Amino acid sequence: MYELVMDEMERHGLKQYEISNYAKPGFESQHNLTYWSNEDYFGFGAGAHGYVDGIRNVNAGPVKHYLELIDQTGFPYKETHQVTKSRANRKEMFLGLRKIEGVKSADFQAKYGAAPEALFFSTVLEDLEEKKRPHCKKMTWGYV
Image (cartoon, rainbow, N blue to C red; front, side):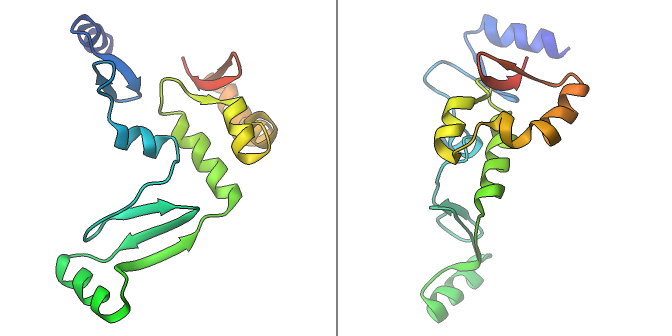
């Protein structure tokens, strides 16, 4: 059934760009791609989440609590925390595997100072490789 749906999507000009999404080329969800690439994004409004410069924020919700918190503190955040480099690079790998393009080793190394193979091979990737799940092709980690 899954392969039938994939074939139909392709037949209608939709390309798979992440594990569960298809789009016409140039119309991919930029919100999703930003999130799956572990890039910065702002959260506006009650209950919204944001991630900027390694700091994750969660806004209060519902609207009443959101507005009360802004009146009291000048900010809408009910939670805020610094994301460690270790947590950020693990999340980047985990989220990046959702994208059809996967995680490019060179990009990962430029961002975190180490290739994913060096950071994860003895733990996460080794376990997954035993189960024949991720593959490294042309120094890009992803599912095939």
